[in-house]
Length: 156
Image: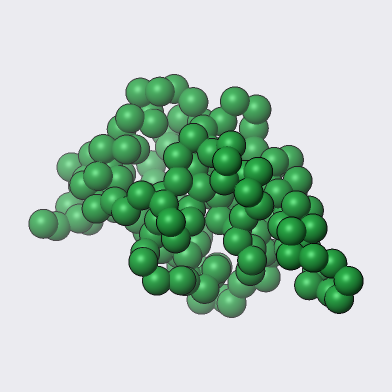
């Protein structure tokens, strides 16, 4: 199984880039985990929010492999504990499809992406800055992997 974190926005603070890369490289070699950053639509006058989200949705679609399980990250998604995310990770492995976890831009994700998602999860009840959301997702996935692998990273 391949996990792809597909996120709108290519410019992140150095601390976020470093932290995200650190968590992603901790996965063992047999786990293929990658970050795919897609260009955010410029926030210029004359474009509606829906038009900007639609342009970003096209870029997200292009970054996702055909047949991939699409998991949208949204504040209205299902709230999971670490143990529940670990169980979800196991279920995704058994499903056999690659997984794309989608993080929207400043205005969120287009409704077409939300409506077409296989699942919708939330990272927090809070609205998070995009840089922090990427780091939090990378860490949460690594922690869930560590639970399933019996690795000492996660402690109850």
